[in-house]
Image (cartoon, rainbow, N blue to C red):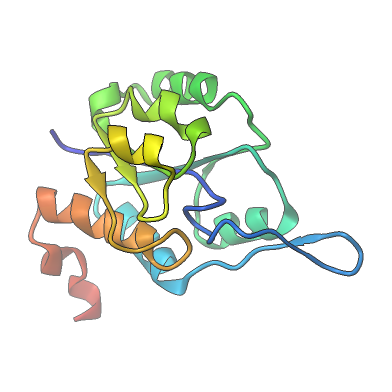
Length: 165
């Protein structure tokens, strides 16, 4: 089964899950640079990337735009409906999709995809349904690790990173 779409959660996956509030009440987020390069490499090697998050923020929109992620579904409490609509619009089957999650809000989608992935610090219920679990925690390069896992299953990993070697 070849994965052609990777869907990511944000808080706890692309970030470490902590919410840091600034003096004016704005939420600040920290992203790992390794994940960013991994996302670009995935896209360059035929794995499109989407983000479905229950939260929305200016820092998140900026990061996703900087990474060239077209499929941004932010402020979505019903991830399953978004997932089904995304499959339909991209004409994909659930087996074509990997999903990286960390909390119970991700489970309904993870049960449907071909490759459900849990980050190391995911909730136990999420880990129990994952077919793969990263060694790294969310926000600490776990997305890059998941991308490398996907690419390694589909090609020689060094070929995916060829332009950098």
